[in-house]
Length: 367
Figure 1: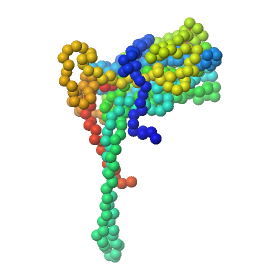
Figure 2 (figure 1 turned 90 degrees about the horizontal axis):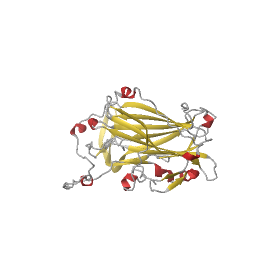
Figure 3 (figure 1 turned 90 degrees about the vertical axis):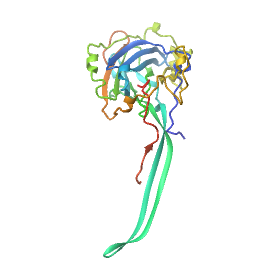
Figure 4 (figure 1 turned 180 degrees about the vertical axis):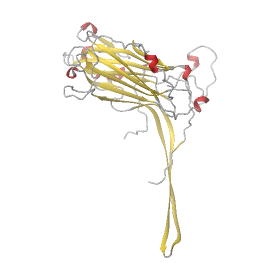
């Protein structure tokens, strides 16, 4: 039986394996507000079929999403990020909308990363007394019985990645789901979350006609004023449009796995089963390296206990009040897949819980 307190292991990040660096991809969208930056890049787009017999047109769409916090806002951080991808037909006919066949990460349940072990304690105190009601006043027989229940267990707090699919509108003409949404939340004990994500989707297309991908990003930070000037930063920003034509064979072909294996566009169905699609998706957690691996010089003394790059406790952060409201910004972009620029589609007892984990945290490499 699964222990829901344990973090769910994620697939191997190629950066951590040291065998491959992430392909930078084509820039799609970037916005900076008050030192917080959100970037979306296109990693892979491959058109083909689910089977080698040329049946069931399909496409693989992989995007890379990253978060960056400027050094000027080290006392603030991202707390929650939501990314939605909506796939719709350029003809604006719901019956022609692509349907999501599968996606990664988190299709089969929430994923936990950056675990923190905390000790939980629960204590129940109970007393029972016996009294006899005798007129004119109750008589206490002096009988009193009491007991105490104590329980102690270890629990993991994690940063989570969850996902869901839904239709963009309720209509009988649409078959399947055409919207996938990922939600990333911080580990509130460590006050951090992963800084980059790669997201993959397999689409079933009705035909080789153009289709639109519309992305929406909602980012929340810990202080109200952190994204206060976001509207100013977005003034004059044009939503980019990129064109792909699934009908053109020249844009089909083979695509390399991060492990240097190949996937043929004529057999995208191979990515549907098992964990194959996960090869294109991962969550990157902060790398732990020693200064000597970055530059030459004298090897510093080994710190006691695990440390992260640029560690050190920030006293200002320790005094930071997290009770303030969250600021939120909504960023949107549209991509055009196909010939010509289309329009946007449809878019019992008293319980005392105590945490024995230390509330102090390191602000280096936090998001």
